[in-house]
Structures are given as C-alpha cells and as structure tokens.
Image (cartoon, rainbow, N blue to C red; front, side, top):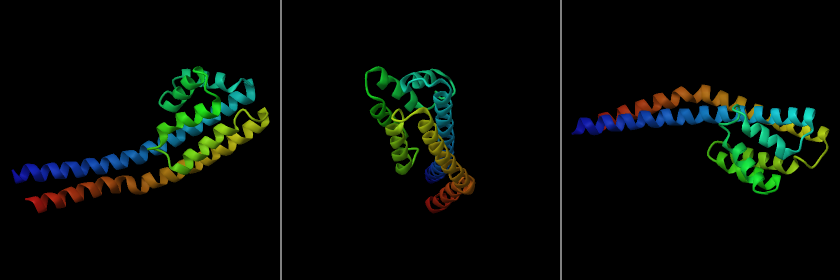
Length: 167
C-alpha cells in the first residue's frame, strides 16, 4: 500500500511539473498568436480601411486565429449590438489565466483606441502594441527555455523525495 501511495505521489509531482512547464509554453504561444493577430488587423486596416466589426468578422472566420477564443467572442458580442471597446474588453477575459494583468490592461486600452483615429493613427497604435507583445513573447520564451525543463525535473525530484518519505 505504501508503494502505491509513494508512486502516486511521485506521478502527481511529475504531472505538476509538466503542467507548469506547459503553462509557460501556452503563454508564449498565446503572445505570439495575439501579436500576429494585431499585425493582421493592422494590415487589413491599412489596405482595406474596413470598419472594425468587418475586420473582426473576417479574422474570426479564418482558421489561423481560431484558437484565440477572444476573437470569436468579440465577433459574437459585436453581432449582438455591443460597441467595439466593450466587446473587445469583455472578450479578453478569457486570457486572464494566460496573460499578466498588465498585458490584459494594455490590450483593453488598445480596444479603446481602435476606431477612434484615422487609418494612419490606428496602424501606428497597432504597431506599438504588436512590438510590445513581441517583446513579451521574447521574455516568455526565455523564461520557458530557462525554467521549462527545470520544472519537470523539480517535479520528478520532489515526487521521488515524497516516495522515499512515504516508503
């Protein structure tokens, strides 16, 4: 019975390490994808000058940003008659577990800026936000590379120590 408990504790600790490592990768991937999304919005605004709700509709319909749930949520809110800044801010709630609070606040600020200036102003704003997210992505990648495997090994080591203590 002790062995079963010890092996279970070991497996749980390894799983926890893997889960924390995966969370770092998820954050990095999400930052990269949102940065690409903002670049796509910038390009669409620059070349088509379409209204925001049309851009969101177009980008939400595509496969490349389907894993960004907030894009679909934003589109649904816009279709129900919600104004863009409110729809954008509400849809970003899904990133609370992935992004830092500061990043979410900045993205919410972006939603308040889009559609309030001319095309040139909007493209500049989107470029600034894309650069910010790219910088955050680089930091997230560095952190994942630095701590990702350490978390897995730490979980395995902690699990082994628990196994020894239990058995």
